[in-house]
Image 1 (spheres, helix red, strand yellow):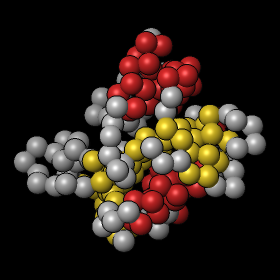
Image 2 (cartoon, helix red, strand yellow):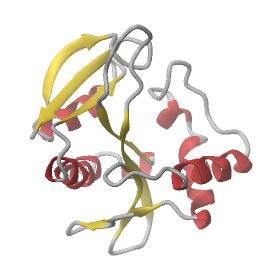
Image 3 (cartoon, helix red, strand yellow):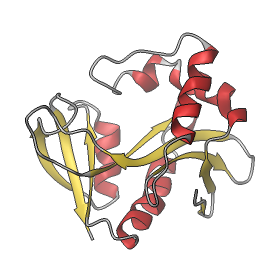
Image 4 (cartoon, one colour):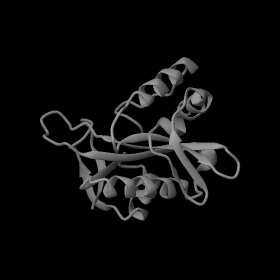
Length: 172
């Protein structure tokens, strides 16, 4: 899996040793509240281990799931993903989604925009024509990241995940 660096961050694939961080991140309601149709937190560290195994097993030449690490401290601060997005039932789509999840201690520092910009550029440079992002309608923080990435707002959409989301996209 390809790795990336910015001035402040390193993006690398998930490793088995990241279980404690994954559990800490995804056991928090403030992180999970906007993820999925029915958000839920992890309640057992074994769930984090299983999650990492699933993410590590995902093979694609461009898509991926990256852990984001502060270069100066080595602290894990979040994750960014680039993956096929599930279309809603009855919708014919074959799109690529970018997304991010960050530990609350890392919120407000520009890490989401910085990390997602690198992955978005990777996607477009690798031949993906369009990348979408979806957020819960009231997740204004992630919507702000989409706008800072130069993505275009398309209002609310039911195209993905069988749920109404705020839809953003950018093209190569």
